[in-house]
Length: 116
Ligand code: AMP
Image (tube, rainbow, N blue to C red; front, side):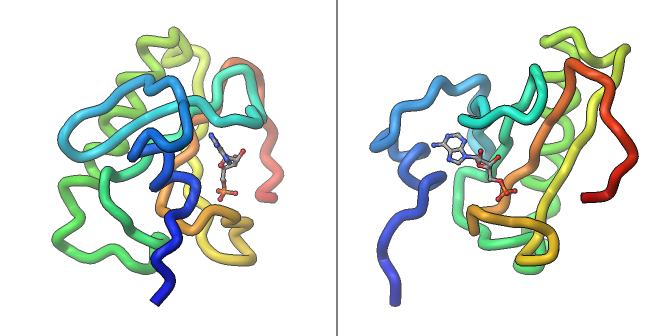
């Protein structure tokens, strides 16, 4: 078994220093280190889920919380009216690079309709 923590586990355990935007009992949000838009926030569960393929009914609350908090952060950052995009990448074709489930909140500029 591989016990090495990945980047997001290290962020949660504060081995990597990151400004948390939001944290509660279920989820944590922080700025993406390489923002793709003026606002680029990552929202992760406080416990390890590898990809969206690994979710089950027990995760309904945490998945719902991720979306709810995304909308609250969007409002707080004043991009709710202009709009934003929520992205979850899954596995290779979905361009997932960090294998710890996370949701991207992207906004602050006009996006485009290109899938990838
Ligand atoms: P994905 O391609 O969906 O797996 O996205 C992974 C995201 O994690 C990318 O947007 C990276 O820029 C971001 N990232 C990688 N390392 C860090 C870090 N130390 N702090 C914040 N974001 C990170």
